[in-house]
Length: 502
Image 1: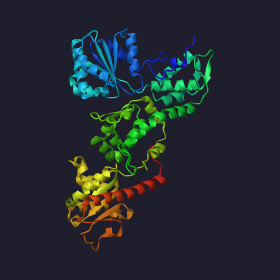
Image 2 (image 1 turned 90 degrees about the vertical axis):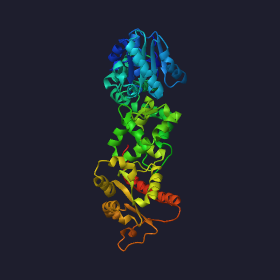
Image 3 (image 1 turned 180 degrees about the vertical axis):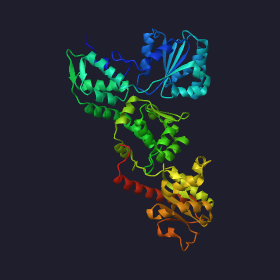
Image 4 (image 1 turned 30 degrees about the vertical axis):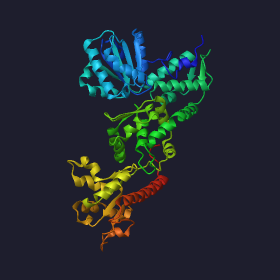
């Protein structure tokens, strides 16, 4: 009997010959046998969550009265809203439930409590979502936690991937020469290993089961490049759209690009924003700026192209890749090349801040405008109001001293008549004055401030602010000059240093 390749290594759908029980399979069986108790399955895409559920239902003979819904479909969402009013729903599976509105999630949470308390024999609600998806329901109804089973899927171990490969090899009577490399490349994804095995066989002309054992001789590296090229046609624009954010700022710190890069490094294709900012303090300012101001959430919510591949939960502050092909693509691209293609000058950052502002309180209006204009360009700037909450209960001098002495690449000093009269500006200048010779201090001289005999700042290049003239236009020009200086610095650094995301 002929068995065709597409039925063995399936690029989509439920496996016919190569189903492998995920590690969590027995937990699913027990939960499905428990009357009325809701079941939440969460984990990365492409690792077998939906397949595991459907195979378990089939094994238990519960697959006859099953309703499958997708939270991404408008008609299905309307049906989900009506679920609590129905009797005898049978088994209902809601895939991608994490994209539902908070109101719909709340409706589901309440309904799952009812099903559990009544211990309904024939009714079962199963929710499938990404990592930490169940947390959003528990937050809406804390007493739900004891009424549902939450089963967390993680990246499949190599032994499970190898088992899938072996099943396919036995059916087709073939043998992959680079099996260890193939397993490594799959990164624990059942979906990706099915795809790669299918491509290897197709390229080598193995389209059905063989009469005798046949070795697959085509190089895995050839197939990897072929698949990447194929995926690139679909995913490059999506990756670039996300990496740019709302607008490309070539001189900026590329916070969106870095988030995408860190996702590519994550085993479970998920990152938590607060964990990331602790791990990468030099990019904390730029990352928090797009997160705390809602820019990240808005970017994904308003872009249909991105919604299909990436999800952000603002409550848990978790960013997740939703498409296993997209994660494979970003895991295997050359990131230094990609960043240049996107349009960034450099993604190498030696300092925590690009600029730090030093000014007297009387000059806050100008400082505020400079801060806002720089922040709009994804440039990391220390401005006291931005970090007041971080200074609370801290020793202020201990907090500020390193910022002005080492952590900011450039210090912008607003040198007005008030500047030498303030305690804090004296403290700040004491910490940065030795950096004049390092080309790190950019003085902004107020026109009504007469140079003093011992004013060391006049030995270095700076900008004059004309007191009494239009502050908005001058602030814009100051920022343009600052950005040009920073851009030149980035370009010079990029020539001699290798970018870290390689």
